Image 1 (cartoon, rainbow, N blue to C red):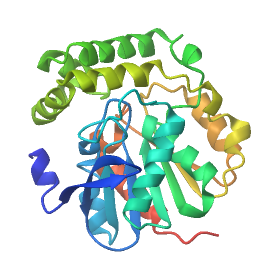
Image 2 (image 1 turned 60 degrees about the vertical axis):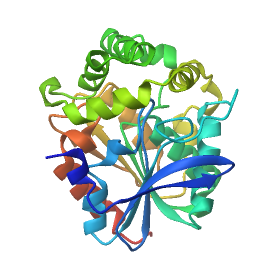
Image 3 (image 1 turned 90 degrees about the vertical axis):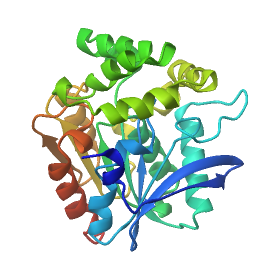
Image 4 (image 1 turned 180 degrees about the vertical axis):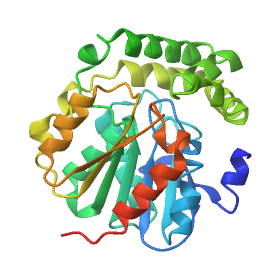
Length: 283
């Protein structure tokens, strides 16, 4: 199955958001659901999510985060999660969305959670897929497996050859043999410009300590939350459990046979869970 067969029928366009030209993909109609990808990612992260949500009667919208993919790169701009959340809010404004469901993966999950904490009236429900920000960076990288995956990813940013990008994507999946060659080509092309590599360097170097999703902070969330983790994800299960326990009424789904990209690696299981969660009325 081709990446663009997955996205067949989606409208791909650029919109001005907070002074930044931002690429979005939109499919379907109905209540809006807004999807935010992870560090170094792009909207194609959700190629297997958008059509399922659209088929369930939702207006599914994915976008390239600030500086990522084909979204603009403000000169000398900040790329900490605080700035990413502000840009995400500006994208909602640009699309005329006063309120939406949010689905965020990794850094996109951290960004979505921060947006929900700051503007709870704009978020109806929040789904966090392998969210970043649950641990301090030093603690996260103390795990040798996580550190090795992080370093492999860094090689793809520094020298975006197809081989390095394939290795980066393989680190996101429980089965490295299922890396999509078409996605490798797309990501290699997106990483190639020197400006893109500089953004990745700044994102990696950003000091996000002030916005960590500690249990104390998560306890202040006022929207329903679903945590989705891969069985082999890099965040320790105890850390995810502590985060979920801090959020009143939060649920956790563990996806068998998946790592950092369960929405891509096991789309049926994740799509079914998202549709069921997002279809509920808020208490």
